[in-house]
Length: 157
Image (cartoon, rainbow, N blue to C red; front, side):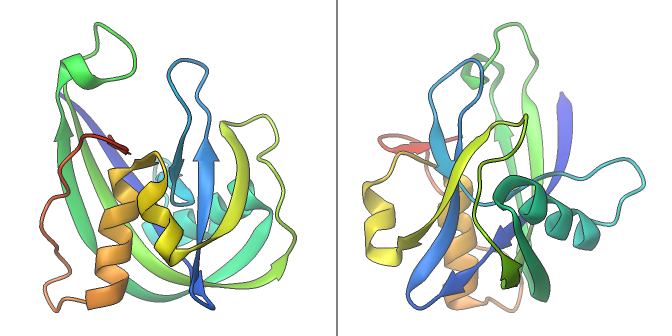
């Protein structure tokens, strides 16, 4: 099994959430939260700020830890064939944008980032991470955990 530790930003302002369109070389694009893999010896707190800047062009500050999500992606549902199943451990932070201008990620897989009205999110082809992050932000559970989001329809791994 592969293991991935990642940090994700949940940024909600004026009834809109900041989303990034992930456009991998293989597979279909989908909307996700800004964020990604925590580098070797990097603190997830620092990783989420770095990822927001890299993917969106915006500078942000962490306001609070929202929670942690762990999911297993079966081998046959991974983007590339022949890979083992993947356990993704995601750390979700509420962040606030302080400055910058939205832009695509240079030389990366984030094609664009946009402020999306919250009611419009359900119509998007999106990563389940979006639903997890929004549930954590809206309920702020004391355990930092929400129920798993089923994958299917417009919701992807």
